[in-house]
Image (cartoon, rainbow, N blue to C red; front, side, top):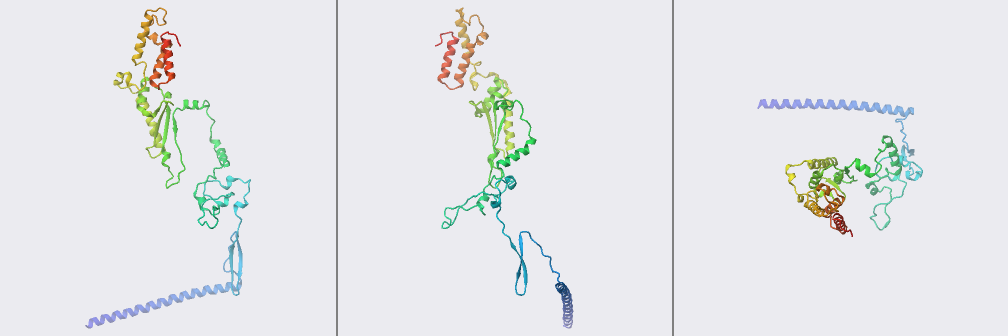
Length: 362
């Protein structure tokens, strides 16, 4: 019990010493702060007696300095000067390209035109009158093309003119351009207001080429028509590839050109079994592969056999096929099979048969 009593007395003595040291430290810090504050106050009083201002006044452009005098204190403050709206002082012959040089949101102070847009919620006041342009947030939402006026476009063209080259010779018409550049690529761009600037419709690419502009033989021509299927328009003689599966426009363009190249090269690739194709295997009517060719030659040779005055007398098969009447008849037959039946096609076939058989033409 005696040892415990001695321990507690030692702890109490130690705590007393710590308290005294903290009090002495606080007193020293307070004396130091009070001495610094007193020095600052003495300096400020001396400056006031000599007439030197405490702070140098800062002049702000566009604001007027005024002095407010009260019974005991004097205060200085600035008053905002009210300027005239810019659109009221704009001249009619000013350069608009300098006023609105680039694309930006609508600024009513820079547009000297009276505009109204929006809706008045309170119909009891200003009923039927739409809000003006002053502070109109609706005009700020819609895109404007005030940076693309005719004067802007003229300046842009003049700036780009030095980078342009003369139009190449030999491309004076659309037909000349098509002959030198047979592949046509069609793309579209859109102004899209949404979370992404990329419009999904802008990635669609269409590649067109005329079938007659491709270097094809008879076999490649027939095989190409089978490969492209409904992508070939018979009326315009145009093959069209439309791609939109890839995410970007450039990827779809490269894919469409790849399809055109692959189809063209594959049409020239001839397999061994293609030699056994018959006339019914072709998409269009083939006069050279048809049985009508053989029957026509046999009929004309039999007619000329007993008739010396006939134009086909003593002529072989190749000579008969080179006659103009026979060529005209072959075209008329092909036209009947490949195109829809019409009165003109039937009349053309009738006249060609009469000429070929040396009968009286009605």
